[in-house]
Length: 326
Ligand code: NCD
Image 1: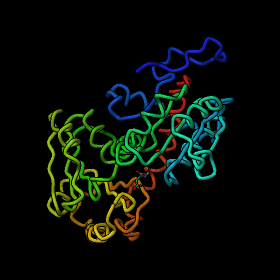
Image 2: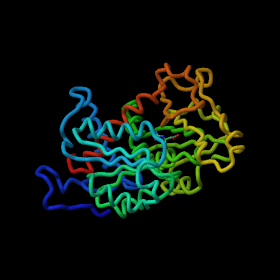
Image 3: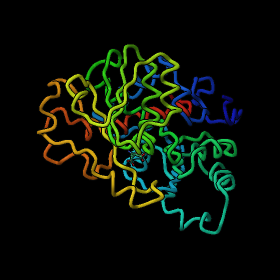
């Protein structure tokens, strides 16, 4: 992928030869195992720095445009926090109805504009391929924060970082993804990214109507990874190391009656979790609705709140990388 804006006038200190300098982050397909080790190492450093000093000036003078066409709490605020903890500034555009988008401006024109004012653009948009389209027209690096039912690469990076921080390894794991595997973009990215590690077995538990897309299953199979599909969790739970729970994505259903049929298909409770290992984790990209009972939150295996904190460190690492400071 070409590097954007190789600029001879860039301020002193930008490492134009840094491997991720000026690169877009659009899909997990871009990342090799050594890339992941590098990102995790930088994220780990970011964690130490945040714990020690809170905020520091690595990206002082840089500006992030945070462009959200879909609702978000964690992704949007963690990118803003990441930029500000690194001493940079943010142009937040989360109410696109107050921007020129409401006047009918096209996505290419909006990102052309933001590329004039910001050094990096984070985008979330309801259409698959929108981040790639934005990247084509923006002069500055674009980071995909979710393109419809497509991908959510920064979430998969923080998910794998979470697994590593929590379980101390990313090889030889039995990973069970549960819930809406059809419309949940996080699991599409996660299943693909897990193929960078050794000895991974993936289990997919979903209602019939919400099965993992064929395309993802075929990609994972082509890399030689074992996968299995199930309608219930029972059989697979005792051998699971990572249980990745997802929300049924109500906003993606064309027929509300179909949503009603599947919305409460699975609920994780302390009772349900009894047959699970003592040393395993339960993850969720959040927001949760009813799929994990609040009674489970105090269980040490409930890793979902720690997971969202790891997101800050991973996003700090990614911003520093594409801006040539890591
Ligand atoms: C997810 C998303 O937006 O895809 N949320 C997130 O980014 N943490 C999951 C979801 O909305 O269910």
